[in-house]
Length: 466
Image (tube, rainbow, N blue to C red):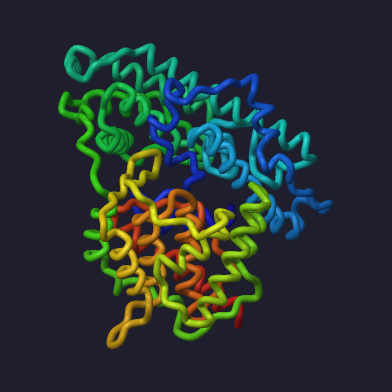
């Protein structure tokens, strides 16, 4: 994944790469909540769209630039598509199948059966067997961790009498991660995650758990370096001693309306601080990055999905060339291609949910009109206009959080972003940071992160076009 480092460097809190295992919470991986039959895994993997389109490995040496281009391009997109398909079938926990040791697709993971596209994609049969093995290995590791968690049935209310048990559990878990990962590149990220999972399992609020773990480790774990016994013991002791009964997770509050939260955040985001994409004026790329991403990712998932998106891209560019105003009716026309429906899909009629139910978007009689009013702000303003990157990011997030359709809203948001750019003569030669990412409705930092992602791609395309 050639752009992952850039994404992580800009990442602001809640922004996550949907296929990144490092962002998984305990609720997303808890085996008790997500059944899995390892005996059926091979059949499931081979039934998925990507299994029928394993990329052909180029017959060149590993050091050849063509191999690197293939691994980061076609093969990397295929691995993303397989992760997405597994996530759709099993739940988000399944994206951990690629969390390889050392410097694989994701740093410092517990999986030894997969490394990266360059080393792990060979023949179709061998590749699919590796996927199955890696998936089962990842699941086995999580189930093994669950066994360790359950070996210490702890209760925050009795913390004063149990600190030695919490400390013993933390020490054992650190050693388990040390042994499993080999302490290669980034191993400490998974160690923090496992300790956070452990606290979450026994009732510590997730945000509190993450803070407690980070403070206990104190930045003392290092890549390519195994912690000595003294350090392991100190981290475990600090963690146990820092726990308080008040760290318990609170009962869930009544479901908030995240559309209203977004509209409140939208007014407070420092949009003028968004970068300008490297200058004004049209940008004509050497290749169509949006269409290429659809061909390399969506077509691997499902050819009809890709054809619908490509047709929508053609239509939106024609709409942009005509200067058609951006509103829900325009989105409907694109979404008819995206979903392959006989007529334009209607605006949703009830509250919508996303992120495994973590966000709820309300519905009122004026919701569609409010969306149209927001989308109208995507045009250049008189006086001191916002940068194109800010307007494109804002329109993308408007579609995400108004969530106007019953299905395909992420694709609709992406098309909206492409349209806002295209209307001002800007196209991109890659879109790696703009798809398969997730943003929170209540985070102003996320909104500016997206604007920076757009700026990165616009600026890069502008440089490449010179």
